[in-house]
Length: 170
Image 1 (cartoon, rainbow, N blue to C red):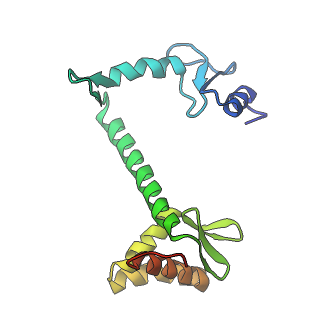
Image 2: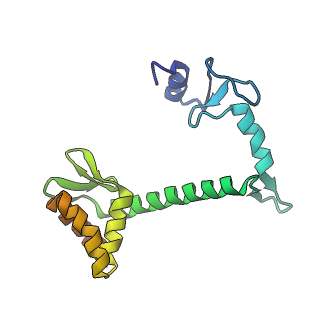
Image 3: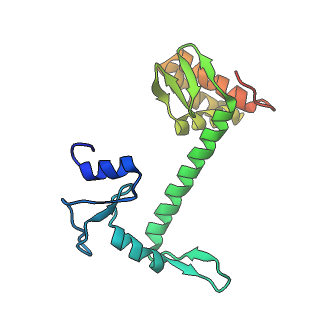
């Protein structure tokens, strides 16, 4: 980013929310001011806000989608993000769980500083192990055993720690 988009890099590093992109013009309004985070046109995005948010007589502001499909996609992405944050919070409460070369840190299983199992697949495996269904447990743990027995043992240890009535650090 520093080389390809120096204006954006400078804006991000300074904490600015927008920057002027000389190599780009908005196809709708022709402006070149963009948001640093998602690269949307500042003017068009600002104009969109009043068209999708309504203030009720009670003073409450509500979202009114212009496109139901786009709204549903956003809702799904938002719920997935929230679920991942919740899962990471649950895993972080356990503290470090170390089995051989694998350790639980930051909501995922790491090996030598690299992510071996990210939050979502980790929690799917943990949920399957805690389901009590032998078929689900087997389907979750067999691929992990094939990858590495220590990884499977680490996931099983995480599941046991979460199943404990009062999770303590392992």
